[in-house]
Image 1 (cartoon, one colour):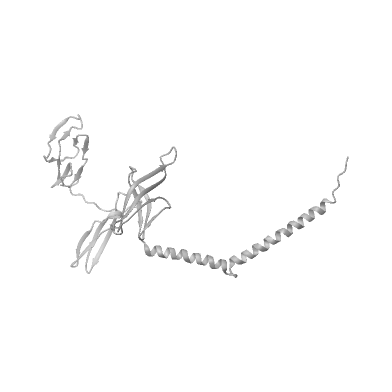
Image 2: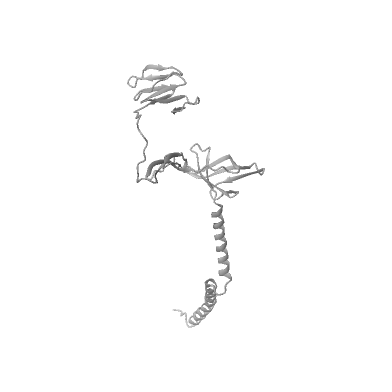
Length: 280
């Protein structure tokens, strides 16, 4: 594993900042290779630190890396963009202008939906103000275990036809366990939470579930359905409703149809009696 600025023992190749330059600290031997001849120029021994120079090829086993350029004084700044970036791994930026009394400050918050908001603190007019921009973490009173993820494709194509998650719901507080499946139009509901099948990992081994915890909104929705059902029933039972009037008009039309058919049959019969077939 390669990491920048991480000094933990789990990292195999550490790239650390030292003034205006970078230091490479590997766990194993790293060869410095000539990009022109592909020959080994020198070697960095395991546990030894060496400068990490731009446009130099470093090779550690099957890993090769080259740093094109290094900007020690560069800063990350948010720039306006009219195009919508749909990359889920790219955070959004939110610029905040804060004013208190005669003091004001501007700061940029990085994050957005699906990102853990990094807290930023500023001192303004004798007050400590904290900001963060991202999704809130909420611990569920129960847990879900993915037993199996099933992905079906259209025959002769890689396009997914359907996918579902077979899960086990575990509520240790209530000693409750339940196996269920989540897929399109089949939502898992438990304790006011609703879980929808959203997406899946590229390796097709993990699943993404959308969670909805909106009990007031759910109550309002079901109340609306109830009022709609009551309105339908009242419209059917009210003798002066538009529906009953249309029903009466339809009944009158149906009763008029046999009369017209009888009249047409009699007219046809009367006309037929006047027809004569002559032998030539």
